[in-house]
Structure formats: C-alpha cells, structure tokens
Image (cartoon, rainbow, N blue to C red):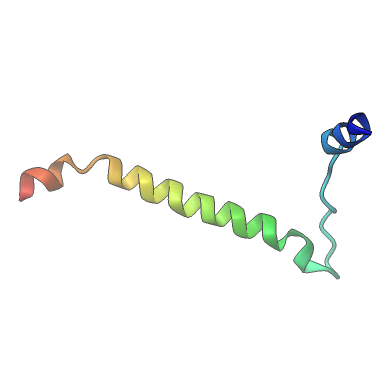
Length: 55
C-alpha cells in the first residue's frame, strides 16, 4: 500500500493551463510571485552597509 502512495507522489503532475479555466494555475503563479517578491526584498536588504554608516 505504501509503495502505491510513493509511486503516486513521484508521478504527481498539476493540470495543464487551459484558457477556459484560469484558476488551475493561479495558485502556482501566486506562489511564484510571492517567492520572487521576498527573494528580491531579501537581496536588497543584504547590502545595507551604507545605511549603517549613514546613521
């Protein structure tokens, strides 16, 4: 039984994009936008040495 579950998890795929059903990939796009925003925000905050010397 557990072999079947593991096999299903390895072969798991999301539904392809279809213009009639835009919500199928909405979660994926939203999550990618969330990650992109926070990764760029983190990258901007890493080099704040000029800000520390300013104060």
